[in-house]
Length: 144
Image 1 (spheres, rainbow, N blue to C red):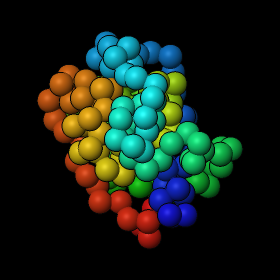
Image 2 (image 1 turned 90 degrees about the horizontal axis):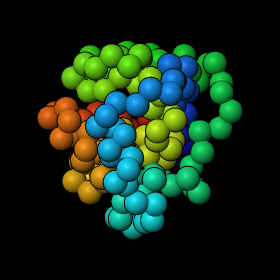
Image 3 (image 1 turned 90 degrees about the vertical axis):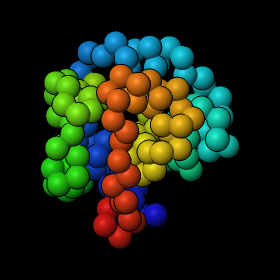
Image 4 (image 1 turned 60 degrees about the vertical axis):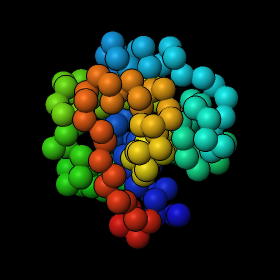
């Protein structure tokens, strides 16, 4: 669990570095249709579908070493489909993602994307826009 939190903090830190205010139209509509209730219970929420919520997970303060480690992982597992800026690739660019999503939503999505794609309005909208599901990277707590 500690290692998975480390990866999540690193990924959020890397994404925060490339943050901006731009929103893609599909992500804007996904934000508009998302509900604010639920969470780990299986209902859509600002934190998505999964075990992480804003109450049980926070990214913490920026840590350059964590961000560097997260960037290494992202370059191996993520950047073939995502850019750090807002340029679309197979999936959306990461610029501004931390303005649009909570750290818990991001962690739920990267750790187990299928339930999110099936049940979360934001993830569904992204799938409908990009027509390619986020693959499960099988992130283990040891590897993160």
